[in-house]
Length: 327
Ligand code: UT7
Image (cartoon, rainbow, N blue to C red; front, side, top):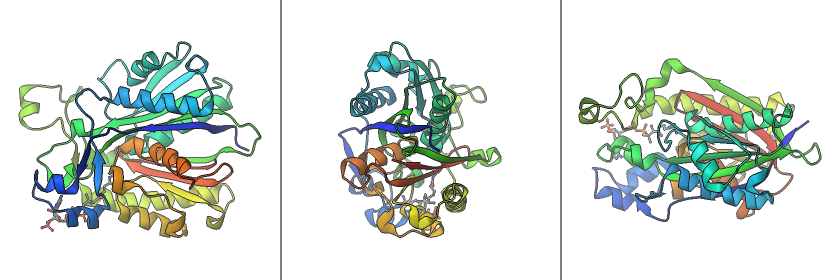
């Protein structure tokens, strides 16, 4: 029986758009390569004064409005991100102040592209044990700020944006989070990481010269593991709750690569007309990709109250996560 449900959603992306054609002028790449290998056509890029907190706060305010909840009613804020405002204080505290959530506790959560589902699971648990009644989950990223714009193997993939959800006790025991799977394999962490800026390699002239403050990814290896882990996690979260693939109304996968999305749908056994895809517009926005997709699918009428939804993600850590919920 679900204990908590998504009472409201919101999203925010920068206005500025960078197309594949724009990238052709920056690195040795082509629109054709990017589209066929990843499915991406455009991505939204933050201006200098747009940050993870400003985008996150905008998404949060929209989600609160959608849920009909005032900022003062929020008990707890979780921000999933790999691009925080700074190492500390947490981006969650910055957003807490921006939106005026005066009563809320606040913390960040780092689980790469799986961050939103991890945060949703924490929010669900807080509601379940009675720790909180109203949890604001925000996933926000400004990946453009840690992208190496000279590295064609990564710079064509990422974009900026934020999504948010308000998690509250299920109104009827029908709608809400039914099952969640969380996994990790830290032994493969260096397949996708930003090496410097922490305690292992504190910022120095050397780390800057060696371009260690940018995303590094072994795309081919990550691709293989992502296909396997996302397919498994999505299938297990459905089967583990006693449902069949045909019961699922919508699959909302992390938007990293259209080929990974298609393989995940195939493994789960559902056709692409029941899969929400917006990678062409936003690229890979890491933790923000699923909540942006949930909010957009809802606004466009693809996602309706009562729909059975599977969300599944994979990313830095390595981490993976899947959740089954009735919207
Ligand atoms: O969100 C977190 C999880 N992240 C992911 O899930 C990303 C997973 N990985 C991927 O999506 C794919 O591996 C990529 C889209 C990153 C790359 O696709 P791929 O089919 O795995 O290509 P590849 O890395 O095997 O590269 C194929 C070729 C290489 O040339 P050679 O060695 O065959 O001559 C690359 O140098 O494509 C070349 N290449 C490019 N060519 C044009 C790599 N990047 C580019 C580029 N434009 N931007």
